[in-house]
Image (cartoon, rainbow over all chains, first blue to last red; front, side, top):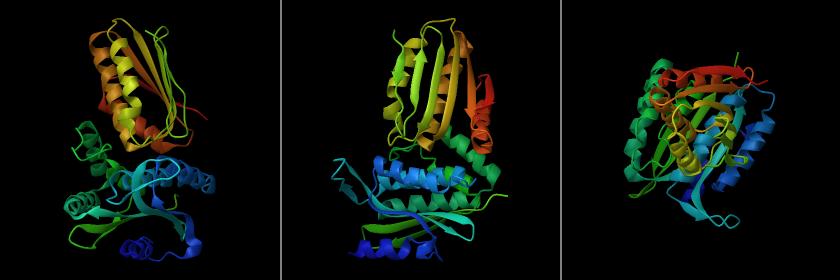
Length: 185
Length: 125
């Protein structure tokens, strides 16, 4: 119940109204759901240049939930366990916002916070070299992907990643990340 | 050895590697949940393929989108060809990108400066 409340209250970008929502999903995120939501995003933004940035940010955030959410559920149709969370794409004043929310273990929060803070501190050239350097490195032992998702997201966005970590209890916190993609000139 | 062919899905690319013509082709989308698992047969095939010297390998990458875990795997494929190019034969990469997709062109250029392999770039309409 506490998670329900968190999903609803903290996952929306600051000034998002219902009519701004393009795509939203709450629940266990599987590969199949990512493909379906992704296709719907591509259809809706087919005539917008920003799709080349919105789509990659959407996939990275959705796969983060799929892989790392602390709450895992069995998907009845696909019969596999995957991470639970909320993912939302909204359009506010010509800018797209891709936002995600999911529960994480408290022991992972420090690492997530310092990584995101570090990335937000870098300019675009520094992000590029950090991306290339990290891609060549071996991934962390707890990483199921390449460990460069956040850097990619920051490069696509061109703005700081807006994130919040809200402690739920002594074991879990709720992580939200919201990424803004501006209208291209 | 046999040709390696893996058909495309909505989230994984078509792999078409022909050991006789030395034309290796990766095309489509690449954002599987587990990229290392998906690309394992590709590495297994390449390991055997690269044993034979004096090949003139042409790798064509024609991806519309790839996620960061696939990005890392692509680098590993290029590194494998780089090592072949330095010691055993030749290898070259053609990087296709959709017209007007500056991001994807830029990503290809980043690879080309990260590995010692000849890269050429072609827009694919």
